Length: 40
Image (cartoon, rainbow, N blue to C red; front, side):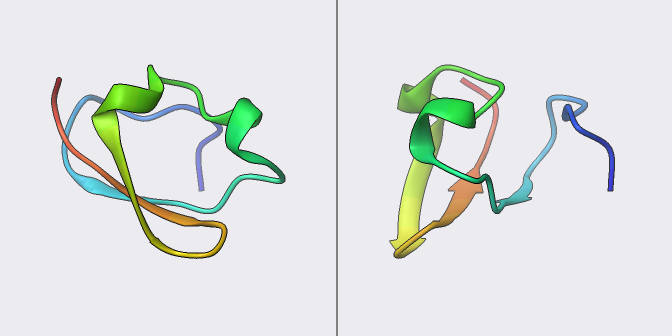
């Protein structure tokens, strides 16, 4: 996995929510610690 995303859709499993590489408004937490992201 790459540490940063290309602006598409996908999942992120960071060490903590503050480690998300894009603005938090781009993510939905689908389960504790697992985030779905899409273009903002």
